[in-house]
Image (cartoon, rainbow, N blue to C red; front, side):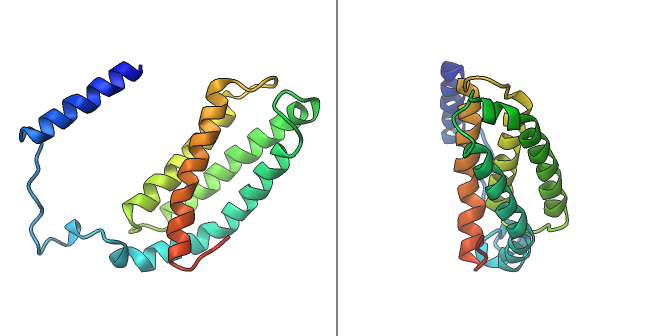
Amino acid sequence: MVLAASALVVALTTRANSGGLNSAAAPAGDPAASSSAASTEHADRALCTAIAPLMTEYDKTSSAWIGLGDPGTPARDAALPKFKADTEEWVGRVEAVMQEHPGVQPRLTRTLERHIDDLWLLVNNIEPGPERTYDKAAWTDSMIAYGGPLAICYDVGIRW
């Protein structure tokens, strides 16, 4: 799998460097070409304001679940069904809010989607018992992606 991903990166890089990919810049007057943070600041702030309570809520949800003990402990396993249901419901609410706030910078959209997708994948695959490698990986990746909305929202003055 890693070898296949590496081969894909090499192939795409080689193709891009040889002119195989369209590398022409968009015309200077093309408004679609402008996706700078400054041009999306208002939309970014609106989305960040809307998601801040949801992010705070999920921070509390996940902290409470993790605080029950290590994976596989009786308390954490017992709380798993509720954690899964709460997470799936939260993901749906965040997705709905995102749809109501178009025009944000692409990085905010991508990292927030990655965060919620990774959480959704986690709760759709996790089972009671000891932590599996891919459960830990999904959680870790969701936390890495969380840094996107966190940084962008903090930059526009919205904190949670």
